[in-house]
Length: 121
Image (tube, rainbow, N blue to C red; front, side):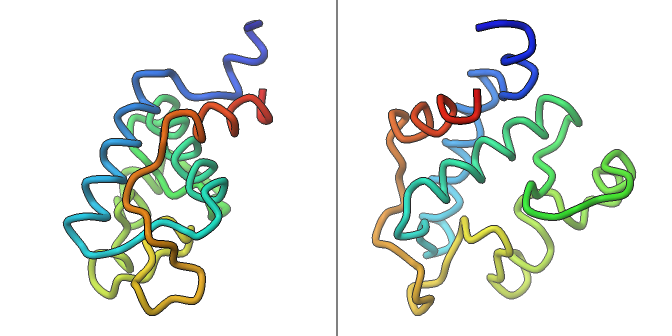
């Protein structure tokens, strides 16, 4: 992997940490991953990349004028306030069972994450 490619992707350590976090949080909250596993994989990769770059898993599905300021404010750090308070996940990572896009999975294989990473590299 070239330097340019590695700067686009999260570290393996952060990716594994965010995978474990997402699986644990989904089970703890009774939420499920999207029926399309590539959606879950892209969000987890984005969280891991923000963890590497910013020191916190800032929601990757929003636009920020100042990401560092948003991290300090903590509102959009995953799990964000809307998720914690109302089980509303803008990223579609944590979906309630009644959501039409909710799958039945609370785990994602590392191979799915690696497949998405390959398309991003």
